[in-house]
Length: 336
Image (tube, rainbow, N blue to C red; front, side, top):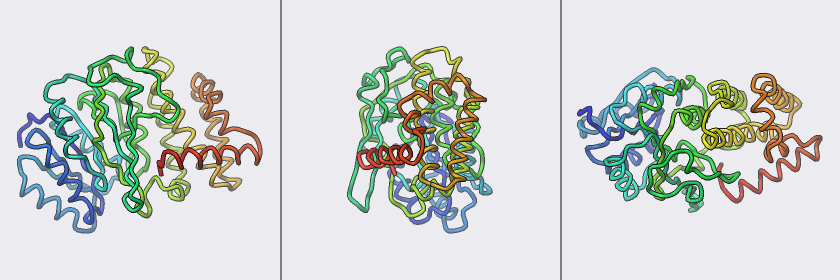
C-alpha cells in the first residue's frame, strides 16, 4: 500500500460481522486516495476473517490490524499510530458514509491544507425511518479555510461530535491525546483535547456520516449510559484534566472547547439524576466538587452556565425540572 494516502479512515471492529461490510462498502467509494484501516479489536466472531478477505480483495486500499481487545479507545489509538494518510477519520463499524458526500470531501482534501475539516452528520434511526442532519452553517462560513477568529458562537445544542471531524493526522499525534483502554465514551476526549492544537478549519455543508441509532445495548442508550456511569464520569474528568483550558490562547477556540465541556458535564449530571439512587446523587455532587477543587476557573463558568444552573436546581422539584428539559431536548434532537 502506498504511503501517499490523503485520508486514513480507521474502522474499529469488535464482533462486527453482521454490519461491518456495509460500512466498508461505502468507504471503498473513496478510491485509491483512501486508506481503510480496519482494527480488529480481539473479535470472537467472523470479524477477523471478513477483514482479512477485504484486505486480500482490495490490497491497495484496505489494511487490517489484529490486536487483543483494548476497547474503542485502544482501537482508535492503534489507528492514529499506524495511519499513513495526511488526514484521519474514525467511522464506527455500524455506521457508514454517504458516497456522494464522500466524493466531495475527498475532492476538497486533495487541494486544501487545513488542520480540521468539519462536515455534517446524520442521526439515522433506521427502524423508525427517521433521520436528522446536524449541520454547522451558523457557526462556520462554508468552503473556506479559516482561523478560530472567523468561527461564530455555537448555539447551546451545537457541538463538534466525532462524526463531524476529520483531523490532520499530525494534529492528533502532537496534541497529546491518549484514549484509555476498555473505556466507553472516549470520543469525548477525541472531540475536545485535539481542538487546542487546531489552528485552521474548514466547513463543508455535506451530510457525510450516518450515525446509526437504535441497536440494542448501544452505548448511547439511556439505560446503558446509566449502567456505565462510572466510565462517563472518568471520561468527564479526563477531558478536563487533559487540557488547561484557562490558558488556551484564542478566545473563540477556548469558548468552543468550553462549550463541549459544558455539554458533557450536563450529560453526566442528567444521567446521574436519572439514575435516581442516593449513590447516583452522591456521585453527581462528587463530580461537581472535583471540578470545583481541580479546575476552579472552569467550575465558575460551568456552574453558572444555563446547563450548570439547570443540573444543580435543588431538591426533587429541581431534579424533575432538569429531567423534563432533557426529555424535551431528546424529543427534538433524537440524540439517543
